Length: 371
Image (cartoon, rainbow, N blue to C red; front, side):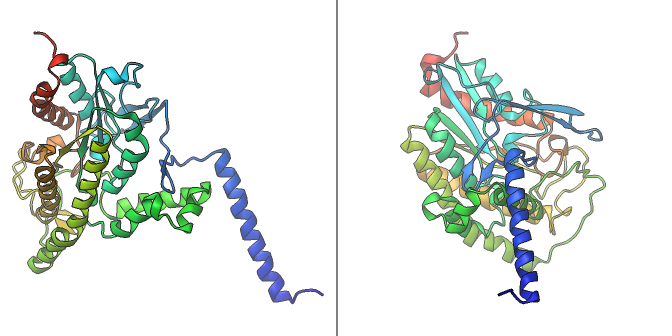
């Protein structure tokens, strides 16, 4: 008994689609041009790789930058055989920690490492920043990759990628394996679905205005105005709803790291979202528009998360490097609204080093260099 012609067409289309999906799955398993850092809920970092980034029209960046991933998938020197005997520090954060468009020796974790080398013996610093990561991504990074390493400290530059993330509540649970749904398990096991998910997440970051903008010119940027009532509601939503869950994730990070004998250190986020005058150009930054808001309003949102970071640090006795209060509003330090130039990373690494050296010296007197 043959099927009716319309039904045969439906079956043929479904079979063709299934074959196409199967071929796509096989092809991506052989070669996947998309650098997947996350398959479902599992972090998969490329190791022992070198990448070259070209910035031919950039005025605030080097024209060519080589990025190296070590044996751990991080930036910095490889894990030494005497790891347990060293003073070990891993920097965790999003793109402002990763510094993807800066050379290996010019990222702020590298600048920090050089400064600590002058004061302490046997210091090992690595950069585990991942572009786009917010605190829910940091939780997975810590649980999957950092806790097994057991470094002495983790530096957490946090907050800016949590702004506006109303989807994090439900998404957080999906990222934690104990809450993983059948759909998420299916994605984890499929190269094709994981690739589609990675592309969607990248577009989501761009939609939220958290990507890289080459290059911000404060002198020519357009100014605007925010409705005071709408802006006030936006900030209150950040403070009263979203930042509450952000604080919970910070507490979870502290709990997980300290339970493993790792001491967390918080770093507040500095950027050009400020209601101040640009040191470099003398132009007021506050009225400039970004992602539908002025820099002044966006700066208020950043400050909500920085204040939350300060509050949780105080509550749990976590050492805090209040970077946001120590970096001037100077467009020469940033190539866009939040990402550091070479000059900016050098300043940031120096500020963090100046704060951490007395803190570490008190706790590691035996490793201080004799001067």
